[in-house]
Each structure stands twice: as structure tokens, then as C-alpha cells.
Image (cartoon, rainbow, N blue to C red; front, top):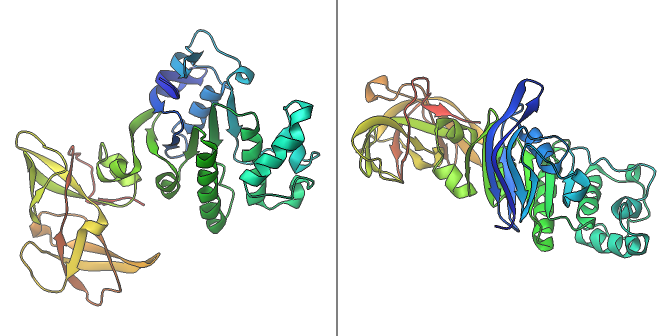
Length: 353
């Protein structure tokens, strides 16, 4: 297949294993994201793919070429992989055009720099030096420099982390659009869930040196593999249920499932906050709850609720409303498809960011 394939990858430092059997597939022309908390092995994975760190076992291949199989390694400079670090790492003594053209044949530098400056929206800034640019502009130059050699794969190691929130949102949108225009195959490493969901065609959630799940953003959000992935990809209500075939019997009544759960068993189901609606009236299928906290998040009103323990919903629930909730109590109803998850003894009812 074309694109990147990582299978059974293991790597570490000395006796400390950091990657414990990573499997990852990125198709040609796709924008992928490796998402996970600090210390889970994201940057080490990128460094192994780039050729900066050796694999202990497993295989990394790009197209028909094997880059590393734990025994032999293709040198980094022969892999045709571009790399954009968190700080951009521009050469301060070179102009913007000089940075972009670095490593290219002398006869191609000026033309290629002009072409890429237009691509990243920095026309006319080729004669400036890095210190004369904003942080966002410097990251665009770093992206242009990485694209200059026409790599088969581009790696971005948390390139927006040092920017303020507003600029980070703007720049990641621009970078994604730029990569799509260039037809690039790219992997973004980040710990920011919103960044991953808005940037990528496919997301691989990494946990403790392994990929817990890889899927398209919509599938990952609505059908996570387990409770930990559900909580990491936004806020999640994990509701005790009896799973039986295509339905779940919960405190909210019988709910259809996203997938057949098989024979009857106890478990939990995922209900995202927007699947819960609030009413002041005790309607059928509604659960009584006390409002413990409410505040605006973005354009919505986020409401935290503590349901009545007799309804079999210990802990808390999270819901969103269009405007402020004016009461101390509410009746909560569930709608849409519930997603079955394996039950965990220490799984809270509401988890997430």
C-alpha cells in the first residue's frame, strides 16, 4: 500500500520501553493525528518514523520502502520525510527565503521559496529574518521549509503549542488547508483534543506506548473503544445499563445501541452531553437531578447535575442548554444512540475535559 504503515513498533531508552507495540496506518494524501497525554510516547513515535531514534522491534514502512525493522535502518536524510518541530527551529542568520531554500539546489531556491511563500500566505516576506516575524508567521515558514523538498510524509510535532489560543486555532486551520492544497501526507502530534478533531482525517489515540484506537474523528467521538478513549475525546456520560442485543436498558428507559451488544450482560453506555436534554417537568423517561454547577462554555451553557441515587446513576451528569438553566433541579432525558462500553469498576458516571 502507499502511505505510512507502522506495525508492532517497539522503542525506548536503555531498558525503559516507551513504545510497546504500536500499530498505525496513514494512507497517502491523508492528514492524521496522534493524540495523547504527555509521556505516552507520541514524540518518540515521530522520532522513530523520522529516523532520529532507532526501533527495537517491529516495522516502519513508507510506500514500498522499509524505513526501520529493528535490525536495519534507512538514514533520516534518505527517508524523504519532512519534520516541523514545536519551536520551528528556523536559522536566525538566514532570511525567510534562505530558510525555505536551505538544502535545495542553488538554482531552484528562489523560485521554490516564492512558490511556497505564496502557498503559506507570506508573499513578499522572503527578505525578512525570523526575528522580524510573529510566532505564527515563523511556524508557516517552518512548514514551507519542510515542504520545500517535496517529502513523501510530513511530521508535525505539536507545532502550535507555544501560540496563544486564538492564533493556534487560526493557524491550524490555515495549515490544514495548506497541506490539503499541497496534497501532502502528514501526521500531527498533539495533546489537544479539539485540535485533533478539527485537523485530521484519522486520529490515533495513544495511551501508555500503544495506540488504543485509530478511526475517523466522527467515529472516534461517537464510538470510542473504551471508557478512557471516550473521556479523552471530550466530555462523556457513562451510564450503567443492561445490554441486550441492539438495546440498552438504562435509568432513562430503553435506548437503541450503535452496535449489537450480543447476549444480555451488564455494562455501561456512552451518552455525550448533547444527548441529554433538560426539562422542569417530570416527563416519561426523565430522571430527576439536582443542578450542582452551571456556567457558559463557548456559546453554550454547561450544566453539571447530580442525579437521584435511587435512579441508579451515582456520580454526576453533564448536559448543555441553549441558555442559562434557571432552576436548582431538573429532569433529564436521553436521546439518540447509546454506545456500549465495557464496564469498569472505577469508571465514573461523567468524565472528560
